[in-house]
Image (cartoon, rainbow, N blue to C red; front, side, top):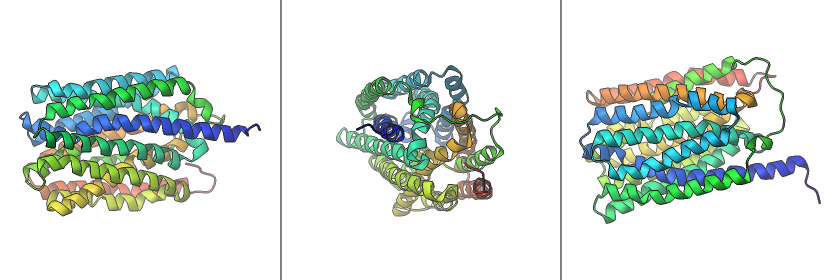
Amino acid sequence: MRLHPSTSRGSAALRFVVLVGVMSLFADFTYEGARSVIGPYLGLLGAGALAISTVTGAGEFLGYGLRLVSGPAADRSQRHWGVAIAGYVVQMAVVPLLALAGSWPIAAILIIFERVGKATRNPPRDAMLSYAAKEMGYGWAFGLHEALDQFGAMLGPLVVALVLAVTHGDYKLAFAALAVPAAITLLLLGVARVLHPRPRDLEPAAMTLATPQFPGVFWIYLSGAALVAAGFADFPLIAFHLERSRIVDATLVPMFYATAMAVSGVGSFVFGRIYDRAGIGVLLPLTVVATGFAPLVFLGGFWASLVGVCLWGLGMGVHESIIPAAVTPMVPQERRASAFGLFTGGYGSAWFLGSVAIGALFNLSLGAVVGFCVGAEVLALPLIWRVRHLVERPGIHA
């Protein structure tokens, strides 16, 4: 019995998303395991709050800003796999090298290179996922991928926490242990490349747009997402605050991060499906709820901080699943990687500027930190509402 082309393509699309999702699981196991403790690790090596916030913010700036280069490069060359593989190799190589860092500036360089690797591989990878998403539903495809991704992001910090507990705080051994999932990631990357050499074939042929410009709704959406990013504190600074204030013991910090990643993964899975049914308007209540992370984390005690970290994880899940799902139908297929690069480049630039501001305010007043975080998120709501209005007009599809 011969399968209908769309049925066969749909099955292949699901297999591709799952394979890339499992690969991302091990990738996140590696780098999120490291990121769960780089705040305390940098502090142990002598860095202060401003230095930690600036380093992590600069990493996010490059991790998103360089996508302005990798996205168009993938579109121009049509070598999506080649660009993605280069990024994965860099990212997976530098994480275990943190075990050899003898000072916080050296560790900072490795942390930034890890973000550079992610910047290189994400736009082409997301473009390849978007080809499969057409058959599955954008929210479902990106949500399923992100759920697997975040499951790895939960396991990594748990393993790091276990290593730290068993070795009485040996950060170097914890980083060295992450070489194992890094190697598995690269192995799966090779398998995915062999089994799916042309992911573009997973998406039915579509008419291209006559104009090379992105539509106005794309820019409004980017502006709203940038405000959300500016008010979203980096976890290393949150971890630094929780440990320095003695709210959470150092060995429990990775557990908090693992909890956040678990919430992020479940949220990505559930809200991706809801997005396919309800549309982009689902971002409005989710943004409001996620905003609660700031007062709970920076002003609360142990249990309030735990709830706040969960809301932080919910926000991360939204950022990593619904945001790219919403961008995909706004732009033509042949400019998909460029769109992801541009969008996340602007998003990351705002995150960097927000991180620097939050780091500076941290030394002045935790209340000021909360005010800045909440204020930026609230300012994003009218822009998200405007995007919802535009994409839900009859005849407009985004």
